[in-house]
Length: 79
Image 1 (tube, rainbow, N blue to C red):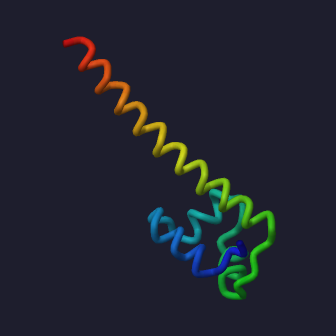
Image 2: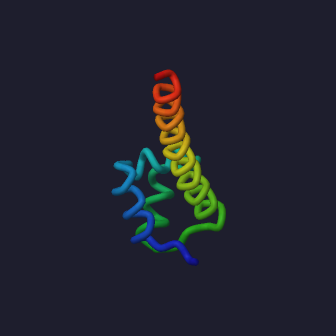
């Protein structure tokens, strides 16, 4: 699926990221990211970087959930 400016804006909103913060995370300048958003044209590298960032954040959330579950299981098994 083609990434659109709306997709990037929504991702930033969901993650509470400024364009500057997103640009830093994916190795771009804020200006370059703003141009991509304004023109609605993203390089394959930018798309891949954003997708990897999304995947990384999803995995971090899942890991945190598993850690919580692990602690609950430890507490239950100690009783």
